[in-house]
Image (cartoon, rainbow, N blue to C red):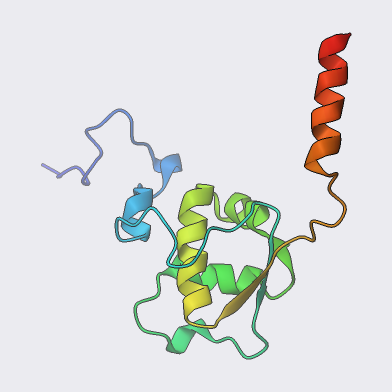
Length: 128
């Protein structure tokens, strides 16, 4: 009698699902990055000589993030490319930033309207 592979007896697993890994296993249970959070539209860029292969303790997802960030890419796009939750990607990026493998560039806030203008617009809309 042939033994079934682990997990084959569960109807919620199938061959197309691939390996099932919980997000907290990728981050070691951490839910916040080691550094301040990253905006969804912040651009990440790998350092010119960034080589994650020589860094101990990095997950394959860390290495993939560095490869994807060889060109400027938004945090939200990285999460979509890796098919991971944004919170997980932020924690992984915090690890890479702390090791100096990537840099994060926040979008300029110069083009955003002043809070007083926004309040006046909301007041005007309410008056309608």
